[in-house]
Length: 209
Length: 234
Image 1 (cartoon, rainbow over the protein chains, first blue to last red):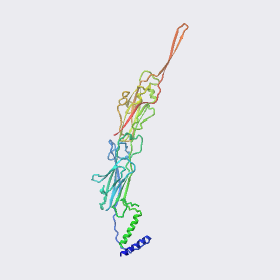
Image 2: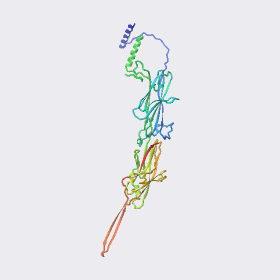
Image 3: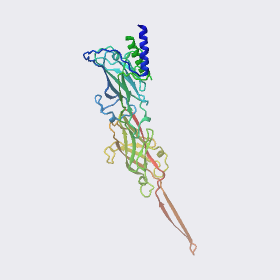
Image 4: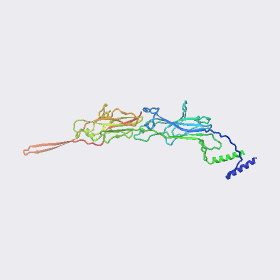
């Protein structure tokens, strides 16, 4: 029997190599259609707010500071911009990783990434200088772990970018200059999975050629 | 048979993995564009009735601006077309300070005698003193106390503040300045003497003279006042 199998396998390999077809014995039965529930992964930018922290900010209420383009920024002003990021994940084995990439320009701004869960204190996940790439895994944020079954996870993060500088008269503008810019980044939520035998890709699913 | 199928599946999988295919996991990304913030300006300039070259504008925080005397003011301060030897003259004029300090910054400025004015040797302005006062309604009359500027008190001693302007706008402060001059006599006298001896031997002598008074002409630019400004963060 073993010899027969080896012979058949050799013949099969030869046929495949030759580009031929090979009919196996088969029997057909009909089974009722089974619906497979699909999991889900979505990621969105769920809005942004900003606040001016400088002293004597009269005329600009903290609740609705208006369009930042209308604010007349001067050296010495402090600003916070909060960017809401939302991930929706559903699936038995669905784990994820959050990446934040910055443009190459250096602003000197700082950032803080923290959780935003109703009724809970914010938890800082990462902080540093803008330009430092960020990767948040289930190690830093347990909401990204694959242990939620069919429960849909609504995960909200807030990325706060803070601008602050010392007042220096030499930095004052006596002629119209280009408006300063704050922020600018790419955030990505990616499914991850445990290593699979024979799977040579990284956690983003891309297999090295 | 099962082993055969497994072998075929493994073969197909191996072919797929080694051919550079991708194994797609779910992923979504969002790029958030940078947010533009409006930018505020600072500006400081002085202009006036007798400003020689129009407005004088600061280019940076360390730049002084000047109130200078044009030829017309020079003539007025000299007492008219010709100088008399006597009195002092009080010549008043107005000037405006235009300042802008957007956002959360405010601006102070101080008026003082121009450094070059204190040491000037102009026949009209040498030794002159200047007084300045705020003209709140811009009608050319002083509405606040005078600040007397002279060698002993070269500056106003009080700063005039422009509050932080939350909207892009320029604040204008009107000022009245009066310069008191003690012009030196500028004249030329020439006397001609004629002496004759009569036949009787008498010596007669007479003379005639003419005297010209003239005005001193405007020399190089003469700065009367200088304004220093300082911007502070509120």
